[in-house]
Image 1 (spheres, rainbow, N blue to C red):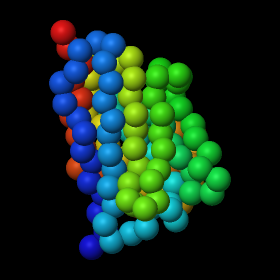
Image 2: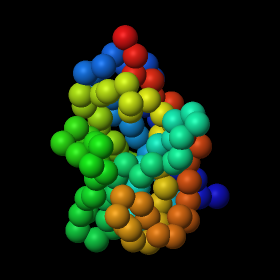
Image 3: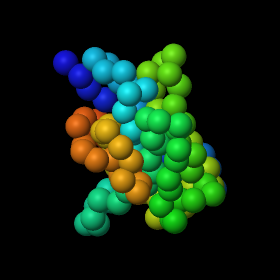
Image 4: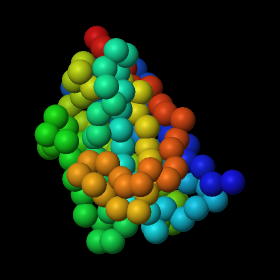
Length: 123
């Protein structure tokens, strides 16, 4: 059964860094575009970044541009989200999703979803 599993979340101080992982089983991520979303309590889901299946082109939301980097490791069948200079407003549950193509910072369609990993940015 194909699934995505996120990890790497935790508690970090403002200005700190975290690297989130989206590991796949039962599917080869190289064949998919992969996006990261986040959702904070009481807020709508927000697209963060997408990496395309062809050419590894990347897109970022304006709120994270210059601070976050999305990448993939084919050997590990994993997509990463490196998050630097974290801000309190980055606090959210982060989810990865895989689909055919990037549509802005999302994917279309959303074929697979992970269960999420929580990121808390606080002093």
